[in-house]
Length: 168
Image 1 (cartoon, rainbow, N blue to C red):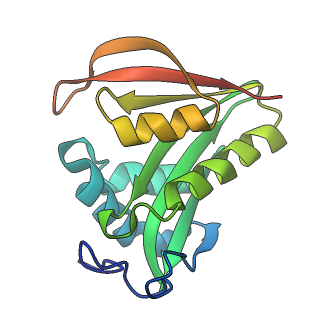
Image 2 (cartoon, rainbow, N blue to C red; image 1 turned 180 degrees about the vertical axis):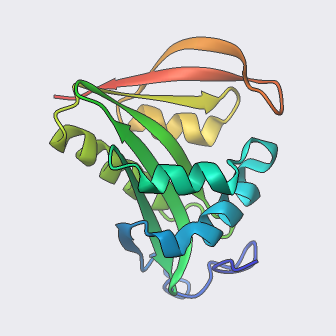
């Protein structure tokens, strides 16, 4: 695995002992495909997208995917589908080795900015029921729970919670 650092070690690119992340944020490119698939597998397990889905999503001009880099390695990724009046968060994954340094928040803020720039009035997402850290992040960004979708995550059978944020 090409990870930024082992669990418990913030990895190359994080300020030693300071808790500050040296993060580079950029649009995902086709050359990131292998790491995106690897990261998805690491974070989502049985719910991860196959390489064909990643390839199609990266090529779709109506979808924006961003990555964070630590020491030149993709440490997080996120994507959004942009529609005329709304946007949908497609994915958010941060390597467990670098969680807690604001990568997920920074990725989500970038996606929300993309949605606003595209003229979207609202942003929707689905999160695994019981994923307290993710739900806490989404709430802090203005998302509210809209409903429970039983068995949304097919591979695991886990329920999903639909969340919505209205954009100004």
